[in-house]
Length: 305
Image 1 (cartoon, rainbow, N blue to C red):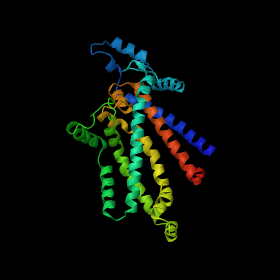
Image 2: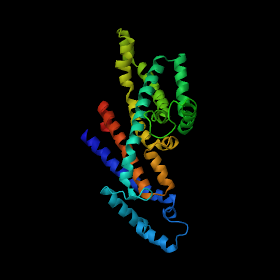
Image 3: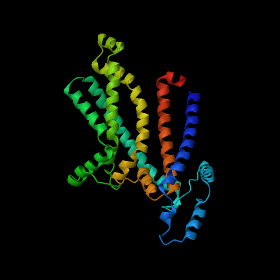
Image 4: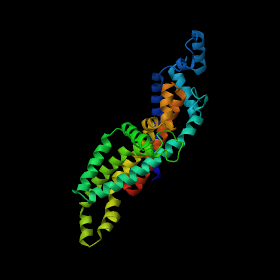
């Protein structure tokens, strides 16, 4: 198990290095921050002077080398738009994004897995067909469109929930549902398919022949063995819920990392955007590592691959 974890950690470090290079080059396509920081009346001398102060007059290789050396000691630079250390700005937004992702993950797991089990057990019934339609529409509807419709219906007309921000206790309800909707549908389909495979196995038929109750067969035998494929997807789900929050946080004006990343793009804030993307990457890899370890614990064959 230790060797398995070490291999995953080495792969994670290499992934972070590659991501840092890609992000470093990609953010510079967004534009020159001097165009946002200087007024239109700025002289060429002021333009060049600011470029020297920001290090933009040096070759990209030199800029990346300085950036990487700073990151290795935990220094992500200063946010140009916030005039504060980048990590301080990110740290203020992490709790909101993590909270929204955890709530959406729990919702996707409980509702999706529960509906998948129910659909498989009631295979061929009207309930099963309704679940399949729900899964299909859930994966077809864009999350941003669903978010807008929910705001229009539940906030504007019914006034049940606040339309945006994080000021009220119920502010998380609409964005968490909109964020989890796709994964509820995906978990439903995956769990239903896995359950159907398990229910058709010989040991389930043997358990029925021995006279075990239907509840015992489903929850003690079928569900436990059907959870392995959905568990793999759960790791991707948790990472995707964190990194995929950009659109939802923008729609609901949720003060998290997703909205911060969008703001950094429009402000051409290199340091902030690079920091947010690296934090997103670390969160995604931590979630994947946790699931890899859990999966290897449940299925020892994974450790040998």
